[in-house]
Image (cartoon, rainbow, N blue to C red; front, top):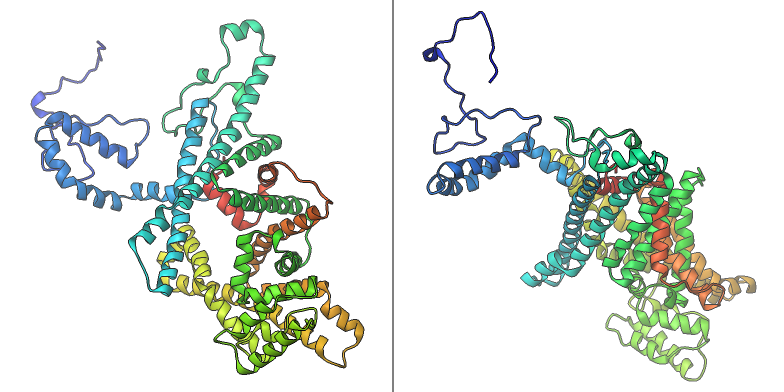
Length: 570
């Protein structure tokens, strides 16, 4: 017992003020005035934890009546109160959107590192699942709108399909592994150095282990600003530790399917190359446009002559986006590579309902010549490329409208979902302006791809018409029929990139570059100029992720923003 000696007279118990009333975050049907006032803690607990604590108090008072009646009334009232509580709104907003300028957490205990990595993995996996499910849902709704068919199974598959879970598991495990090794490797290094430099007697009597670190001071979050021994004052990872953490985190790709692992590994490797180039200040004027042109030339050449060097799905996507029939591509490939083609492909083009009368007559002439061994020029004739239009001058406008309309659902999802997910505050404050800005981006992206197809189609018809023209010099005729002319047409499509926003040009260049590198590698491998690498996708992903994390500050603003939202400062 502690006695306090004062000069003041003793207080009269009758004049004492009444005990304070416990302030609850919501009205209750029973009074709790008899409860003592809560002792102020060193820190303010989250709103959800406070509500759960109140429920436990009420259960302890009268579990048979009070808590049973409260659960019925407060099930809806809690949601309304929590939705209007500023603290709860801030906490809920941090789950979806990480605020800029978040401080780096200094973790000196292994249990704190594991908890930090687990929380990051859970958050990243949940966000990735929602993003993938949202994209699938938007694409499914557009498909249902076009086909006039919508079933509940389609909605469930779009949201809870295998792709959504795989994508969530991939990003969640990637963030968890990276956070674990990024914060664990410096701690392990300091422990090894402390053990190696400390005297044996001191190490035996008072070993410097993470468990010896004192607890967090009052008012600080767990893992932030924790006091630690001298050997834990500097726990910043070195560049090599960052590279190693990035390489190990690439194991998360095992959750994806094999063909997607290769695609993601290519993208990661290209991003790593971009970071290394920018880190050394190698800036080329209009470099994104030039890279896009070089990659497009290789891709279009592979599409026409070497389809086995690009993924089958990507080859089919080009086939559908270009609106060129498969038979036209086969005729062109056979005429150029072998000097002959199957006349049945010509018959398929002739028998189409949309084939005009004039083109049907020209195709009959071509079929008759092919049956007698005369396969014509070393390329597909224009009447077989666009049998539904007689004149080549009318093809560009038709191709532009068809391609832009067909790609509208894809670009709508790519523009709308990031705007709602990463800029929700701006979208809610300025809905009309945000919708107009998003619609403008969708229109520009659709126009970009439409102009891409128009440019290549116009070059295709132009060079073949010039080859057929009697007055064309022989050297130009050889050039117009050469394989290089097909590659050059793909390179010329880079001018369509100027339709897109400047900040998106680099992203589009980084998207097509992996496909071009894969095609070039396949051609070199077919000629035995390079060797096959076992588990090449895993090796490529590890190298790429190490480069990305080593020079992440030099990546594009979009990629840096995505990495920050999923990973944070550490």
